[in-house]
Image (cartoon, rainbow, N blue to C red; front, side, top):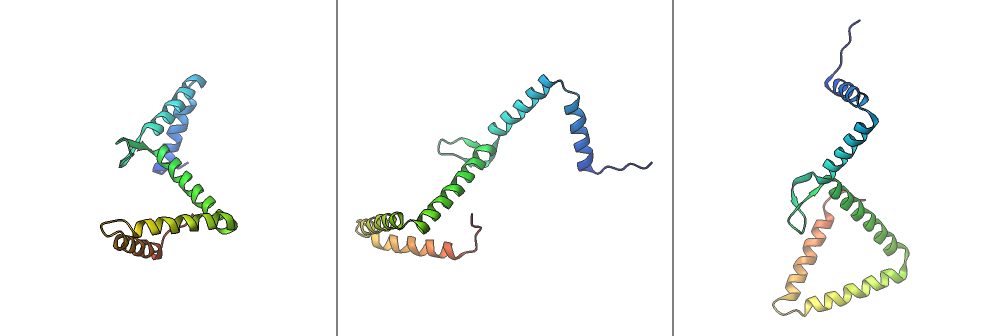
Length: 127
């Protein structure tokens, strides 16, 4: 019989053999340590507001929370006339204030709106 295993199959077989050789207590300890390592592992070069690197888990949680918030707000803006009116009034108030800021508030606001429109026209992945 000719048995050939590629790299992935060999890794899976070795991993299963190792895990199966542990006692239930040692297996629990291994799993807890692996989870701890995932929670503490910094992601590549990005830091949070405290200057610390976020773990992969933190980053995934933040991305999932942001996506959920975007869906909720989109649904509210689409389905609730009251919510949409409140947001519209708030945006109008903020825009009026920004236009009247000393030091070129109107010009800065026009550039910011222009930049946002251009960014919104670029192809991007949606929730």
